[in-house]
Length: 316
Length: 183
Image (cartoon, rainbow over all chains, first blue to last red):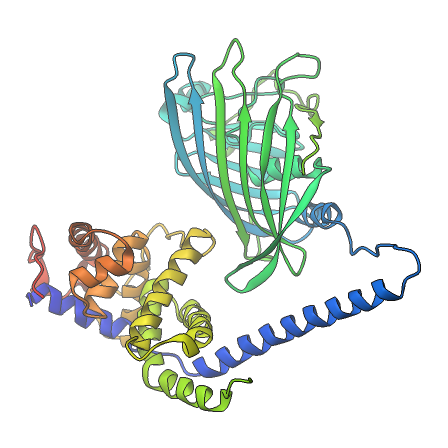
């Protein structure tokens, strides 16, 4: 055994030695088992009641719990108007050129939103940052190429709010203001929730769980139009699943988005895996220094036209 | 025929009393904090309890639980929310002082570990906390022995950089270019 290995063992032993008082593994296991038994008994009891009701009915009428659509819509609405949350996401974006070559970019992002106050912030592994202060959106492209587009050597660009629906909020090398071609890679929570609000067909897939929560998984499918209304651009699609916990909060979104090629841009695909937590945590956001912020003179002071219309596709 | 749960419960409880703390210590090195470690071990113990009646005499429940802990941690990590988002820097240490506060030192090492990529962290914990041979670590993590050695080498280097002055002075510059399998 080398001296280094021994030192590491010593470090690890010290790092795991200070077990705090109050940890009772057996008690926790018993509690989890008891909770599981309660859920199983509740499910069996509910099933027994359902069977009895069906037998005694003269005509078949189905008494439904809130529909999958209603539950998903409720959860999404809660995320856009309720408690604050933190999120983390991995987006993999693929642009397929006409000659078949594909460019793949993975972006890790994280941030926090307080939808009730209209504030939030996002950071990505590319260095890009976005801050939402309620009245405005501030974007730092992060990349040198992106910042070269900003006059005066400034790092930030201000987009007067409120936040446009499905607008590009994670700027890379292409800054887009107002109407314009939108990329399926621009997947902040706000964008995804805006998209999910428009879903009208949802299938319940089954149970879902994570660390400290259990809930339900729903599958969705929706088509997306790009560009300004009437632009005639082909529609894309968004499909995926959304996990909602027992408190009605979104815990995870896994989505696949695709846009077919058009004359001015190759086809795109993006997969997004986004998780949510830390509900109710304080979200504090400040605007970047005015001296480092560029406000375009021609930028709209009111939101532009809605950047997409949603056509529902029937699934299942 | 109803299972006799009393005997099973007593044997399971005895197992947890004897081995639980060890797995908790491994879990805190994997997760970075005691709360998450407790969560991870309890979730893993529940899975072990359900599998307990099916374990045959050749199965070592301790090794079985270790596998459950590693797999559960990996699945939680893949669920993204358990992935730590590292702070920009480790907390400042009081200048001019060595490791004087045992609890603070332990937290420092856990935080440094938490900044390693998951696979490197798992390799270091399994190699230097659980003292498992390379082949066993490779089997648990589903990678090659060569990958285990690479992860260990890189993990040790990064850990040394992160801990800086807190790394035991005798070990500075002694990390070999390539770590061999000495077991």
